[in-house]
Length: 333
Image (tube, rainbow, N blue to C red; front, side, top):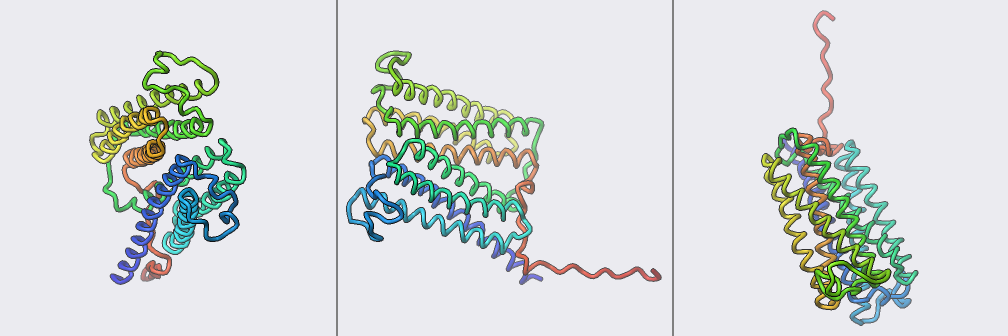
């Protein structure tokens, strides 16, 4: 019995560390995609899946940046395939984990196809934005799987009367953050990044004036300010109503701190005239903020549910489960 429990523990632990590695690799992939875009390396390999018709690309900086992104995407694909295999072997009766892992594989395949279409269509703005959206959705799904697999190991947290409303607020803020990230992608893709060359004003004015690009740029700033205030409100509500869950409060405050840092980096994009390092950092922080808001929502759900069991409690591997004990009929039956 003890040996079986050790085997179950080892299998579950393997899945949990695999999911963390996959989350890290996926985040790195998105950030590297931002580096590709910031350095204008997206069309360094004009064909797909090969690069200049070769399996091994020319040793040029832009080509190597783009090709590294493709290689890391392949690594993420294999990690997610391994994730599904381990999920099937370890959590076969846990539908949330198994089907979630299967959906992750579908998303990564769709992401690869969309990435190829993006290259072949000369980095069309809408395709680039869809590429980021799909990658960010994949990252959120992987975080859900991490919470689901770790659920029973996290200490139970009792909710209160405010927990459900706070969870809904956190979910709304997370969705808004996702939308903000996509508006930033559209600003970059449409060439509106330097429609105004000062910050926080608009060419020295309080209200923006200009054509289409100016309005795209200004709208992103206004939306960013509104969502920054929303996340600040989330942090305030966490501090006021969720003190029973220190992790939730800490993560909520970290999200607001990241908003302030992101605002500074966004301004640095303008001050440095879109220096590649500033552009890449802006995307990296945007995805980090999205990830943290997903985490806030998941922790808020834990407080609402009272434990992580609703996200899926880990099951021991099928082969290591205890067989059902045969019942003994009562004497005289």
